[in-house]
Length: 297
Length: 264
Image (cartoon, rainbow over all chains, first blue to last red; front, side, top):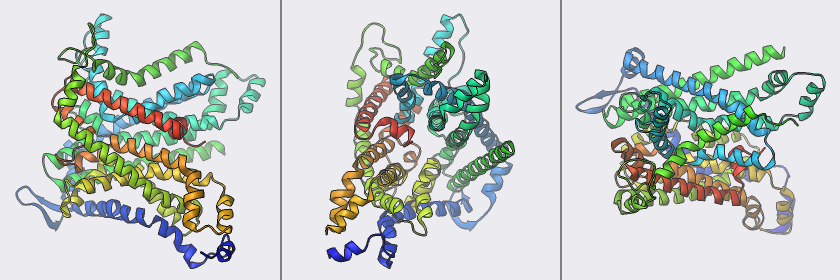
């Protein structure tokens, strides 16, 4: 390439070539995402309206019956309701545990601070199946938790294959997603403000409530959005710890696809989950934003 | 600055114990000499690890997962580096759209992607194909590389590239000798993170794998739904060990705290 021409180029008026450069650079990724993300989602949306026949399979006629079945059948509604309350409960526990944990970690001394933060976050990188299996050993009838109960003279409890097991394991999976955003917003705090409040004789509790909490609220909000969204679509945890009877939406979709072979209904269930998830998350976001504006005047 | 009280420290110890408990129990039980899932009391045994390596299904799935994660992470990096440079360096109409599209697999449930891809692969007669499975994995792990590449590019000094250009270096040379070395920690960190996420992925893979292409997490999921014995614990312990190794590497090239907590 000509040196003089190039030297003149940087930061000059964007030529058509320079305008096309970012698209050219993104083109390979764009083609892949179009073929394996946008097109499949569109195909699935169509599939969810197609007629299903148990003998001939998917037919080309269109119908709303899968969606009306989901909206009217108590079996499906029950599973959606269970998925919702389990996700909401997991989110609540993660807020109640993750927020103070991030706060305590941020007040640790130098080496412990980062070591313990890594210990708490590192399970994030271990396969969900491994962690679910670990919990099934801990919570099983002969598991360590029940042995400890027996040792304390308490009766053996059935935890595995109940909602409790699913909630416990989901909290374990989701807690890092809560701690990370709260930790990030705690790092942005100005210690001077806390010291000013202290010098004005605010109690420790008042400082927590009026200085720290309002500033980490955005972190708590984004953390709970992630936790709720991931819990609502969790598959391996309810699959391994909920057993065959206790289904959540994701395991239900799996059954429709691979056992019932009713793909249109499975697609309708999956898309309903996606849309319901988005609606819950967006309205929650809207609600918190509104209260935020009100409290700031 | 005020310190944590004893109550806060106790709370912290409980949370740390809670987070580590399932991983520790897996690693301990894997060494049991017994036939059932029990904590080894008399002595430690490697029999279940031997059983894993003698189990053809697990060995095959492990190889599948290793190849899949290696190829998918490499392809994702090859796509994310130019795309990341485009998004971080240029302002152009459609930039937000591209950024949102490339990061969307982080928000769309893997379940939905699995359902969508199973239907698509059936229509094009690609079910059970390792090639298409790899591409599906590339889609879900590209966002991890992309985020680190964008952060790395935004952190570099543009004048170094401009100096090289003004001295007559071609764009290719500038990329190879100036830009790439500067963003290399982000690229390698992104590759490793993508590798781990591909290696661990189960929800989408369970829909789009066939008996020949079953990955290790999918094999483990299916095995755990049918039978529970210490073999599962041994495989899990091996997974934990492998993840720990990958995390060490990640810490060396990029910094584990930066990956997990983010840039700030």
